[in-house]
Amino acid sequence: MSKSTSIRQIRLERSSPSYWRVTFDLPPLNIFGPIEIPKLETIIKSIETDERVKVVVFDSAIEGFFLTHYDFLAKLEETTSLPLGATGLQPLPDMLARLSRAPVVSIASIRGRATGVGSELALASDLRFASREKAILSQWEVGAGLVPGGGPMARLPRLMGRGRALEVLLGADDIDGDLAQLYGYVNRSLPDSELDGFVDALAMRIASFDKQAIADTKRLVDIASLPSDAEIRPEWTAFVSSLQRPATQARIGKLMELGFHKPGDVEARLGYYVGQLGNQ
Image (tube, one colour):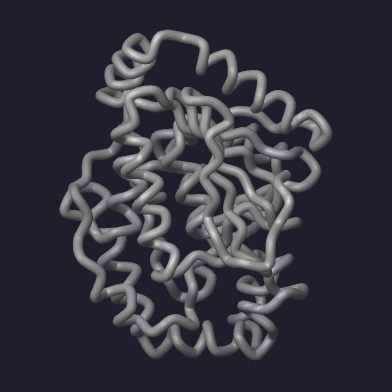
């Protein structure tokens, strides 16, 4: 895990011309919001257009958090006023769709919570590897009255089948590394002490191969496996609509009272707390 700084940033490190690392360093919780969208857009565009890069690894500098949920303290118009992306989708789903199709291998190295946006970034990546002891993945939104917006309804059934996808989405609970591997949420769950070395070795191996062969192989796999933009588009619309419902606002308000958006037990065990909202 990279060392964190006090400045909120998404760092792009070119380990070599062919192997890049993107590190989320958004203290204290790696919450992603509209202010981060232009930063990630710049990185995605570089990944798409650089002629030498072959592999990009996404990781975190924040202990306990890979990348978490969207920023619910930001004003809604800060998100809805952003221009559509190159695909015609809203900015976040646009960037995730483009990452999936880029002629570069993307790898999510998951240590800590990949919750909401973090899960959606991992699902949009080509490969996902998780710390057995420290990774937690979830699509928690339904528990708070929300509809997930970044493409998981289109992507999860392709990875794990309809029943398990519905369990993840409608159960809205935390999924640890071993269960994530069993369900196909991630490629592998590895002992935490082995995660960095494994991901680095695989990334360097792929980076040593011919880029055209990588890009052509990935493009052909994409034909059989990726959802179309038309399948992803309704999810963001449903997310924004659900966010404005009074029942959803009431549930998010309860989470805020308990400590949502702050370091503490709610963010560390979000799956547990959304499961308790209906009992309060």
